[in-house]
Image 1 (spheres, rainbow, N blue to C red):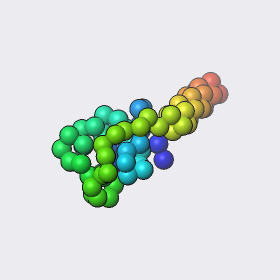
Image 2 (image 1 turned 30 degrees about the vertical axis):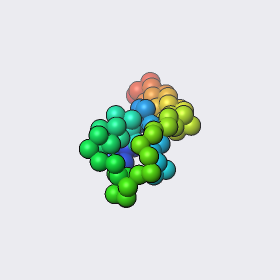
Image 3 (image 1 turned 90 degrees about the vertical axis):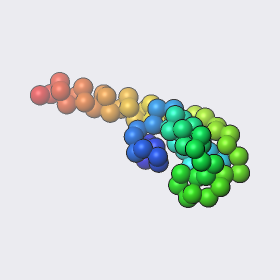
Length: 78
């Protein structure tokens, strides 16, 4: 759910492209240097502007925090 559609890694700086999908900023910028198409559909993009996906970034950070707390609880009970 929080993984980049290009490399499959957890996103740190998610941005939304013209195709409506979110990608890790570094990965989509690299992709757009080579192609002006959607990594998901291979269709041409209307534009190459990238918009920070703040809502997704907040959800990822909340998930990371919850995951870290869960790991702390598990290690404390061991």
